[in-house]
Length: 472
Image (cartoon, rainbow, N blue to C red; front, side, top):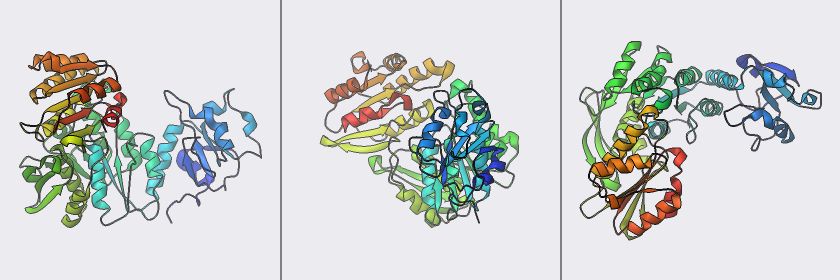
């Protein structure tokens, strides 16, 4: 019988995590784990994680007061003077120590994954990975119970916590993997042990921690390096840097993309504007029509990636076509809504990097006509390192080349975006820097007219969803 919360005991998690029981009964049943003392429920084990801006050990006592089953803490903290040693008595629940609580969390998740008869799909890439994850899950859920990351829980904390939600009825787990430094994808792959590994693309994202785009490619392909020989690998066959970097591992893979050499391709692509995109899905001389309800040409590649994953594990075309057709999009990821007077708002505020911005602007260009003006509102892109200035200037050029009527930019490098737009011919009186969300909303409202299209995008830290809320 697979491991299940409510039945598993404290003693059973000691070996997988290389932990020591300092106090309490090893036969104590655990109803789950929690890393947040504010929301912990009775019977759960509080897992104290130490981050750059917080230390969960500071909330160990609060977790006990919330009737936690006990605490998992680092030995270094327990042996320090700040640890409340009075906890170690018969009236207090479990106290378990490990060398590193973050590593132990991953180790427990890896063990938990092996206790369940589940097929795991792991997805990474510089852009499109969240949408691809949702599309894959939509397809697999047509025929079987599927677990997936909630939101963007894709890091060394979020992915293990997702795996620890696996229950006996789950047949699939679809996991997004994010990273901003070398080694993270390798560790996440060790934890998840995926049956299918997917890389959507390699682009200019998280450059600050990886030096250059080749560093991004090396970091992303850690997934290929670490997957087992029996695992399937799915790659973007139009991404030559990705293919070149992946080839050094000598593993077999199937490809998706628009090029004729890809295993999974799209033909007869029809951009339907805000009504979505239609295309013919092609695999091994079999063709099926697909209609995506979500707009944006970039979603064709996301859909091809999802289809390639599904085909690699022998999912039926029927489930693939229905799963893709039922996908309704994600808030903050090229989500199209209608405002009064025929105005269209495209909310792409969840995140931004040069690759995703380029793809989004291409899709915006396909959604307008001569009677519809474009208003573009951008926040700066983070973690670009030495490429920060050049990439923001290039972003401004792309905005101008789109034929944008009015351009607003916000953030420390907003001036670079505006200067890039002006260099490419945009009038100075229609390209401005703003310093707040409220100012951006006001200027948009002052300039927008009937049937305009407003596009809003920026890195997560810019919080441009506040602009969308102000407009809605």
